[in-house]
Image (cartoon, rainbow, N blue to C red):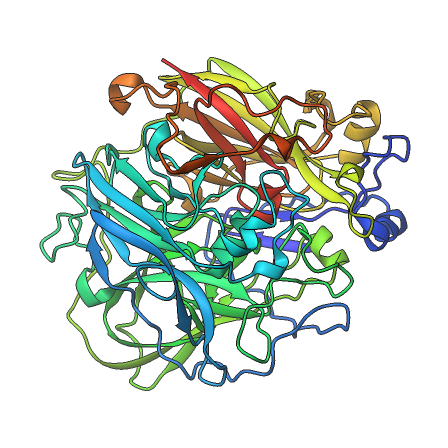
Length: 626
């Protein structure tokens, strides 16, 4: 299963994990175990592509199986793309229930949003101007109540009728008590008051729910929105020094895959063989929604557009391209601008990642139509479970003249522009972090007892990392699963160093993991690498907060922890528990032999942004000392 990106090619690998690795070995139920056992290990082809424009690979037809849920037939491109309103990052947003129609031919259904029926407004903040925002929980009963998994930590039957919620500004550099820590949340009637410092460069951030154990359901129900951080260069006004499109030519694209029931409601399950109310370790829909509408159309004029592209899906990775093969330019990613626009025909985004792109429609004819498409193939693990592949995303229809607008030659380093991106600094230490899948028999779910973990540790462990503010670390993120994982680190800024294929089976067999979850397992990986050390794609060159870590590979990431002076606050402060808030309950231990709720909560979290993995249990706490 070959993946193509500008700058490099990486293949998905199959591997057979050692059968001597204990009952917590990597097994994914009967289907997964049989598939893994049948395939064995195949060495990867890691032939790099030159950093040039590539032809898009052909699109295979979608597959349908009786083992998966499927949406009713829906005609694509019949609904217009909705554009969320923009409002200042201030005041109160209400996490609320409403009625929304995802497609012309679907009935209205109950959804969640922030001060609107689905998703939230675009919040606009300004560098160095703190934003004070209150989020009030007025959700009512859970939109996806039957799918709340009460075997998961912090989750109870009460979450079906009175769900918890908390808001995290993804990519924001904020004090711990305004970061949306998953261990502190609010039920109906509660209010979360956050102060966003905005002490960072202009970037496309986003805000979303982060309540422990139900994040995947809360976000799928609609709790997400974009946050534009402006500065003196990217002002959002027509006279911005960068010469970037603004106003009607700056458009958000929040891409989320969904599956629908005939009554218009969401179907969050993928496999019909998985019991309802159980975290299935991934959510993959067969319909692409953009800004909350299925397969929409956008009428564009013949000029340059700026699209703020967010992969807001729970689990799916996308290779975004244009169906006519037309190139576009990436001008920024998660945490700000690149040094110069990068021409490409493809940009790859895992859940939580963003790309700031320019598309020039000026050379096209009136009436011309083409699509934003997904070229990404399933990784091996999702192919085993027959996850539906998803091709079309939305359509563009060209018509009418627009103002002339050239693509900027440079974005950083010139007169009146921000400083160029700095070179990578030498790290003060290197940490090995292992991403692994486990059998979770302690949950008592006999049909599909799986979980994901980091370093063989559950979230509730006391064995947590401690970083030092103002320093750079190198993290060797070792993915020994057949699934890709997007790793998001709160507070920190990341730069990708390289990626390299590893022989997971030999790594696993040489260093068998402990028989008990809760004992750290992160052996060094250098002996088990294969092939070349591949650099990041050119459009990944800037600062990021979420990094794609492919299956059977080591991704080397440079993690910068801002200094206390940069932050303007103590990142290791004890989190206060505000009146009306709820802390994670002690029952969350689930028999894993780890500590109950700590007497105090400090610091931040880092985790896989596949939200089903994050919920159980691929998330860890981390402290950042001054």
